[in-house]
Image 1 (tube, rainbow, N blue to C red):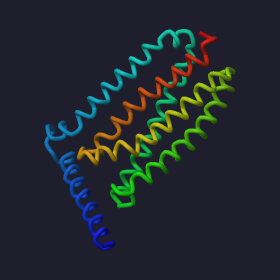
Image 2: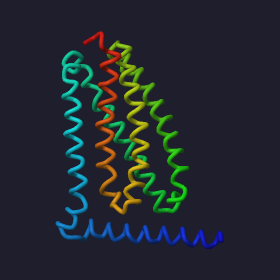
Image 3: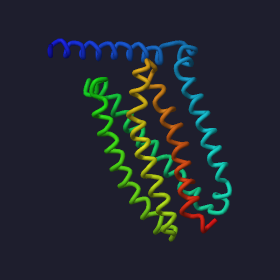
Image 4: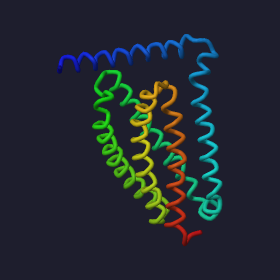
Length: 206
């Protein structure tokens, strides 16, 4: 029985690798139209996500006008979230290809990745809080930046693992689709968290 399960897992991995080779061949050697069909839809998702992120910033325009310093930390939060998500996505993809993560064991690894995201988010959040406070001399601003970074890194790390898995499960090309989905969700949620916290903790400065 154990031998049969092992053979099935090996077969599952081989099937996945064969599919990925075919997808990779299309992305590298296919016609421009074939490449478009794979890549363009995901870029359109990113475009829509960028518009949504812009709408979030626009919704908090008064807060930005009242506290211009908020704009300084937006790239930090967005970039750190993006880097965390990319790390997680790359690690998941490599581990899945090597058979270290399977459709049977993914939940265990997801829980571990969430813990990693929480711990990294906490460490980076504390550091960002201290730096922002010392730099601008406003403790509440430091708390806003620190908490925003904590939540954004945690969410991005989780998405970096979960989205490639979902795309694989649904039969989509996770190589082309993971980053656009991660970026879109991370940017919108990160900005909502950042400006939401600022509206509460920095209300006295507005």
